[in-house]
Structure formats: structure tokens, C-alpha cells
Image (cartoon, rainbow over the protein chains, first blue to last red):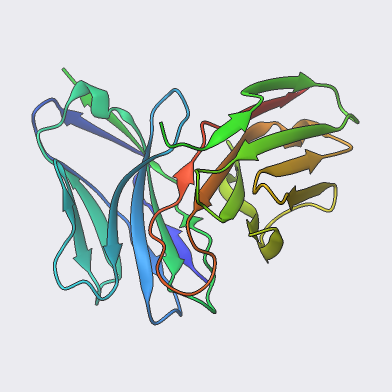
Length: 117
Length: 116
């Protein structure tokens, strides 16, 4: 079974500052992928970043980076230079790799980020 | 635009009724996933289809059923609706369903169901 825990129901950050959204996970799969999705108030789910469990380096996508600490089973999302448009719900998710394991994404409960002007 | 199309975007119906939600995956994607997002349960995986066959089942009620057609579009049927079924229903697609790493799921914009 897989479990994702996001302990921050809500976070506030000042515009142009960096913010870290926490995510811890638990899985019995030897290989797995970790994802972050953004859900603005309009409702759609937008993929942000992916980290494979065997990737040697932390993933980065523009202003998003994933602080992956495998021993601690954490996959925190770092957003640099926050913008007002970053205000949204952020979900951490995971899935096992590849065949023979659960392939659907398991989601955490989400963190509501509000960027203050 | 993710390339995944869901219809209808909004649906209001009464308890006891039956509705069908439709999903067209991205071109070339063989896997379709259905998720339910409600305020109290968060994002819950319902069911996955790969190339027309059921691949995995999650927390899907017996009143709910789904299928994937030869053209790869999928439908989620919700029957004997209850107030608690009010939620945002997402469809997502990915390239592969077995073997190999297929990357992220691409989500549609969701179908918001309100049961009165």
C-alpha cells in the first residue's frame, strides 16, 4: 500500500519569496515515482514536476524544484520567487514502477498556498 | 490544455438518478483513470482501464461502473445517486498501462456533479 502525507493544510508566502511544501510518503514498492500537481481555483489538475526514486539528482522545472530525501521518505516541493498566480492547492502524489505494481497515482490531502502581495 | 476532454463540465441532478460522465483521453494514450475529488475524502482513485480492459480498481462503489470503448474513450456511470456523490470527477490518461515508465497522468478539467 502507498500513503502520502501532507501536514500543512495551508501556507502563506510573500510574493517573490521562496516557499517549501512538505510531503512524506510510505510505500513497499522498490521503485516509484513522485509527482506534484497544482490545482488552481478553476479546478484543473496541472502537472508540475516528477522525481523517480532512483534518480540521482533532485528534479527541477523552472521555479519548481523537488527536494528528494529518500532515506527520510520525503519529497518536498520548493517554489522559488513566488508569484500571485502560484496561489492554489498543491498535491503530492506517487505511483509504483512499472509493471506488476499499482500504477494509479495516490494523492496526499493537499496544501493550500496563498501568495500575499 | 492537457488534451484530455471531459463532458459535461457541470451536472446537476436529483437523488436516485443516473448520470454518465464521458472522457476522451489524449491522442495515443491507452490508459484512462477515473478519480473522485470531494471535500471530505480528497482525491480518490476509482478505476483504471488500459486499452479497453479494466486494469485496477480503487474505492469505487457498486453503484458506479465504467468502461473503455474501442476508440479508447471512457464513460463513468453513476446510478442511484446520493447527496454524498456530489464531487468533482476527474479523468486522466497516460501512455502505457503495463511495462515501462509512462510518466505523469494528464488530467481533464473535471466534471462537477451536484446531487440535490
